[in-house]
Length: 488
Image 1 (cartoon, rainbow, N blue to C red):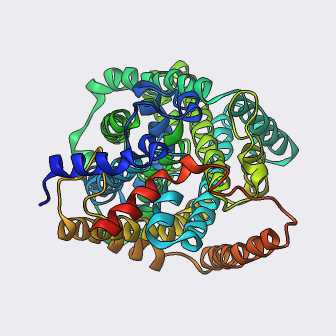
Image 2: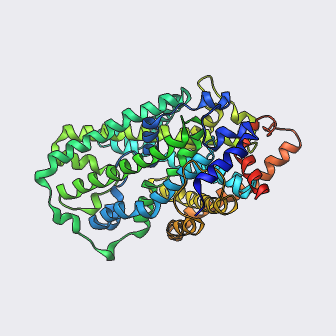
Image 3: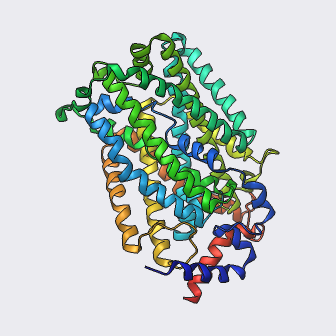
């Protein structure tokens, strides 16, 4: 194990040779004006932004009971976080503090594997995020259709989807600070009715219902995809790292608190819902928590849960769109996308990135819930494989580079840590349907073809791209890594 104190001192002396690199290696002294203006998010808003990137509450977990029964559903939300969520959150904390700039995982992969693979990572993760975001208007309307039957389909549902997308897109345009504190408020309001439902349900709980299991009737594809969808996207917050106040402390702390909040926000409502009402697995589909609330507390609690679901989906939409749009901004600042993607609105938000992300949501809203979950999981898996490779490669190639937060394992430990989630990725991919596979394959091919096409447009000067000379501070981390490699 390397001496962390000596590593830090050594890296500080290297960073002094390149003043612009300092703020991008996790230090906050004398940052550039661009960084000072950008880093606005403190711990509490960041916790709830991560909460909404990953979860948003128990809405959407009902299919785990439908697919596998009560016992496996409960076990899934206790065991799965250790297989997937904890390693992903730890990697995000280390890499996000090592490269605290907009673009996040695109920057990690580019630094480890080159700009070509960084671009592929950006395409896969952006499309995965947009597909994921297309799900939230669907869930929003699913929770309201029992009270407003007209929203079940047809033109009213289409108009409601467009109106909701437009409203939330406008909020993203108005600023990340607004989005962060809106996430705090929405998170508190989304979880409060489940606390009340839990208290009311205590006399009605039957622990024997928690132990029901039938391994012969498990839909493993739906079960694993639903678990995976509800417990991934911890790395998404890294695309906003350039907007975080003191990221070397704020980001790891926020990820830790958010992990606790997410797991508790899933497990206890599921425990209450299963234990308080007779089991009928066929009823456990999107929106069933509102029906459970009616059986436990009456119509008033059902309406409250439905309102909480609506607020939760608003929060998830806001957080995901922020992540997706700032990812495009970060890619443009690194010269991977045309320069107009890097332009900010007067509120500091990436206007073009927001418009592109909103357009993608509208175009993909025709997919069903299960197709959306499976398709975004498929693309997300490819992106995570690149992240794991980049994480291990940077550990091996630049062991002495400054890491304000470092997972306390060596190179072998970092490899071993990535093995269980990689196995899980292979299982999820193997269980995907042919339709989802073909859609995802087309997306991968488009990404592979787009990067050389953009390079051709750049050489022809038909589109303007940012250069390192235009934005020298953006490549500070990469510069220090290269410097460290030369002196070893």
